[in-house]
Image (cartoon, rainbow, N blue to C red; front, top):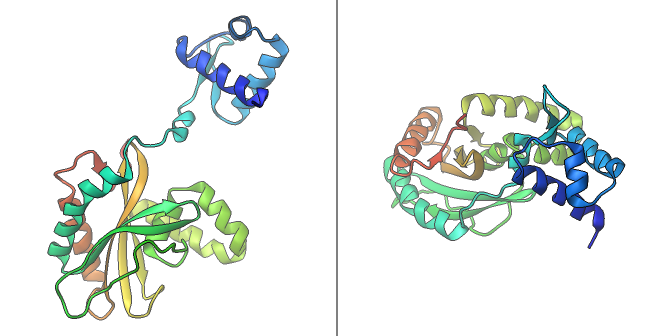
Length: 241
């Protein structure tokens, strides 16, 4: 076991379990560590934003940033079970294909889909990894992940990605992303984030042929998605405070 990793978590656990406002001396005594060693760990965690010092005393406390390390307590099996009827309602309301997509590191894949009973419809592959920058779904995942944005800047270069950053700001402001004949000239798409416990866990998307699924239908699709989620209040398409 790497001792520095163990000590980091020992310190965080001690702070969390002992009032979340503790002195350096208490940590050192409880964990049998040198004060200088504890100070170095605390200072590093403070610089990283996981700790802060109390305004009235030199005590340390854990910041809300640590919440980003918590994985949402919902399984993929339960997510698909609960969202399957939602997709069915979305497709029924829009008469277009609907999808549930999940992130896999720098890629995403479609976990569920529901297709309309129409001669012409969009049918995207299930289980295939898709890149982030050319689809509405990928743009939504990019919007809510600084890590993805940094990764894409490194991969594509800042000049290429500058336009995408402007689009990301717009997506964050309006709450949805569009793909208008970008991934495929015959396909248009609107996508919205799906939040659970203030974390994005998936993206909901409606796709249709570009000749019949345009801007008027985008707005209608977003309304249908929100209406379809009303029976599942634990999920939201907006990042609530």
